[in-house]
Amino acid sequence: MVSQKGLLAITFISGAMVMVFEIIGARLLAPYIGTSFYVWTALIGFVLASLSIGYYIGGRWIDKKPQVELLGYSLLAAGIALLIVLFIKDDFLHWIIAHVHGIKASSIIASFVLFVPASIFFGSISPMVSKLLLTELNIAGKILGNVFSFSTIGSLVGTFTAGFYLLPNFSLTHILFGLISLSLLLAIYIFLMQKKWVLLIVSFVILLASFIVSIQEKKTDYLFEYESSYNSIKIYKTVDYHTQDSILMMQLGRQRAGGMSLNNRPLPFNYLYYFRLAEYFQPHFSSALMLGGAAYSFPKYYLNQYPNARMDVVEIDEKVTALAKKYFHLDTQNPRLNIFHEDARTYINSCQKKYDVIYSDTFRNSISLPYQLTTVEAIKKQYDLLNDDGLVLVNVIQAVEGKSSLFLQAEIKSFQKVFPQVYLFADGGKDQRKRVQSTIIVAIKSNKTFSFQSEMIGIDSLLQKEVKNLQLSQQALYDDYAPVDYLAFRGM
Image 1 (cartoon, rainbow, N blue to C red):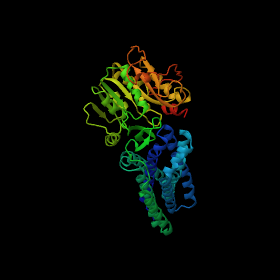
Image 2 (cartoon, helix red, strand yellow):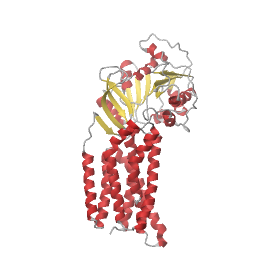
Image 3 (cartoon, rainbow, N blue to C red):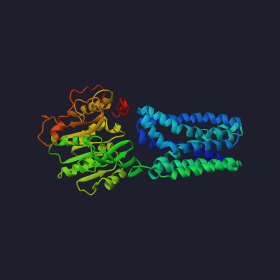
Image 4 (cartoon, rainbow, N blue to C red):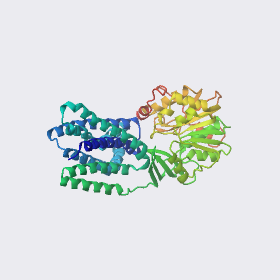
């Protein structure tokens, strides 16, 4: 017979497992669907709904048959559901990308299929334990309080364990295997106490199967794959669809975050050449700040192209910098390069330096910038960091007009609240205004006038990509209200 302490321990552990599963779920979905608030909303919503269903079902089951072995059934079923997730997650999410259009639909379908079944069975644990412990009606409040207290404390422990220990140190496959093992071992313990030998053997066989699945090596074309504290990082060789150049690519989540030409092109992607516009608008610059490092494509070019200039780079993920050094020839010992590993917003909030140019190439997902960098308050901080003739250049992936331009419109409006001059350049040119493309916002601190003509090699052709007659129907973004993901994905 399972003791009262044993039942409360099961409640505690199941509460912890639910939260570990939910938190790693966001990282599991990120490489395929991203990390927008749509993903988090669908994930949290379905887990909460599943737990509610589990509470209802567990209560009805235990009322009909108040036996401890029902806990074993739920834990066994949860283990099987988790094993299915471990087995199908990659193929299923690849299918989602190929067949489901729209971030909202993708988030809903993926969260429902992968996270609902196991969460329902975990949710059934607490009401069943409550019934099994409830022997006297006059202490019902105490019993129920103990059960839900242990479950909630377990959830708290699971949350911190997942975020501060498991994700930084273990792969998603190993964490999932750990959840499966823990669920099945609890089931085995219950079946052993209840002498349910067939179910005990079944649980052990499934545990063995999950171990086999977890140790199988995935066939992949990636040169390197890693789950850091901030990113799902992949490095692989590919071909740039614009230039047909061979590229060594760094991917963070679903975003192709940086690369290096394998054919010795100075810059791997066309949009990076637009950062050269700083040569025209501020020809005597000597100091720059780069928000977002990734593969350090542009910082390497900058240090090589401008031998008398220095650059500070803010990259939140130390692992990304280490991989840029290992795979992308980043020289971290260059005396003209300083790297800061922190969030870009916290850096600009506290920075006391002055710069001639600020380059911003940060992305939260494939087309959306981190919202804390998009607001008027963040832009004002960048304005204050610039010298008198300084400028900011920001890469934004949007259309110039239409539904797919809503975020770009809001961001330009935000820059216009702070800077006296704001211009837009589109890689696709003036005639492809409704196509999603790389666009570069150039915000200039001075009131100096420009002819938009240059004799510098390569610069004049970039200046001709200026987009005029912009229709800005969106409001500026503020820390208090910045629906960046909503606007960015509205027309996708």
